[in-house]
Image (tube, rainbow, N blue to C red; front, side):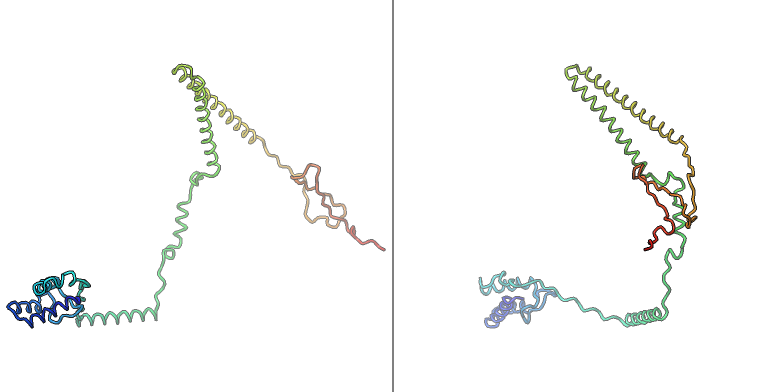
Length: 280
């Protein structure tokens, strides 16, 4: 209820009590008794108490009939809000439910105590159950042939070289055909077509021939290189630590690959007493 509704109900009750008419009991009954069984009671109006929409409309009609244009429906509803009834109280649990909950609490407390005094062993994992499963899986999936390992960097470089070679061939053929087509622009169309096709075919044959010659020379060089037998010869041997006290140790020349042919490093063990201090 809003303040205007409370004032309207109070004024309606005062008017009815001061000026009893034939409609007075009906108005008082309409004010004090709800329209339906589910409507709230209006016996003691107060701000914030619930009131139904039908009761508000009835109140407005009563006020308009007694005091025309004194109160509008908008003024009655100003400041009101939807009334949400409080939830009904929860029913009291039965004795069976209380006994069951007490029994479950006792069982849970007993289980907690047992876990505390006698902890269970750690859960068994898959690796604990099958310790050699990972090794067996690796052995099964190990490649049996060298071809199953996959392509290496050499294979990728060879494929890249072949692709670039094909692109080079295509660019050369298309370039020659386009050049002949533009150069013979004053010829007839069939002549230009045959000239471009002939030039492209000739360039393709030349490219293939050059590539075959290159491959033949490379294979021949590889075969010659494999045919040359590598001869290993022992030039000199020596024993480490032999002849440490002698003075006739031979000189060992250590050649440096980065230096010139004439640059050598001499390392000689000095004879005994070479660095002796001279007598005064």
